[in-house]
Length: 175
Image (cartoon, rainbow, N blue to C red; front, side, top):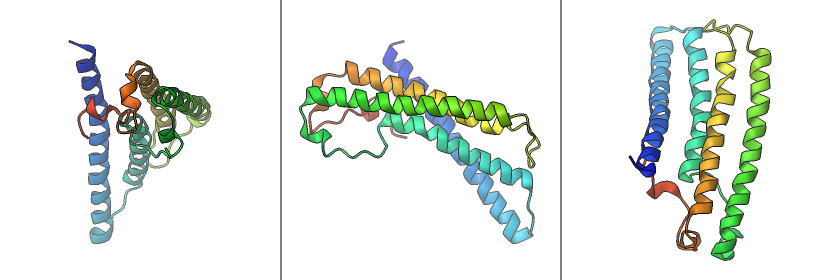
């Protein structure tokens, strides 16, 4: 099995987890709304689960946005430079993103460890499972950022020309 095939399988698993989580969140929210407004039923456990799942899908999506180049970018300056400079601007940009992500990983880990011993009021589980979402997804995002940096370095200069985009969307299936 080639490296590209392995990357696609990993990407499909990664995005599949995100798709499943979003689908579960949508079903759970619809259930909650119907139960509350039509039957006057409300469960604190389900509400806390929805909030936790919303946080998970938000943070899980960071890595997908990085891999598919679906994030916000202001590229007026970037598009005005030569392709050889674009490569290194892209690398520098993602190194900065990696530094910010690693800081998020460090501080979210410290926070999760500090408050993780408390028990949640809704699901009555240790808060480490809820707050642990942040360092887990920051770690996964760091891996995604490193993959992007490697792809920038390995890509031919033609990928950085103004009519092309150094996007992995051709490498990965549409989500």
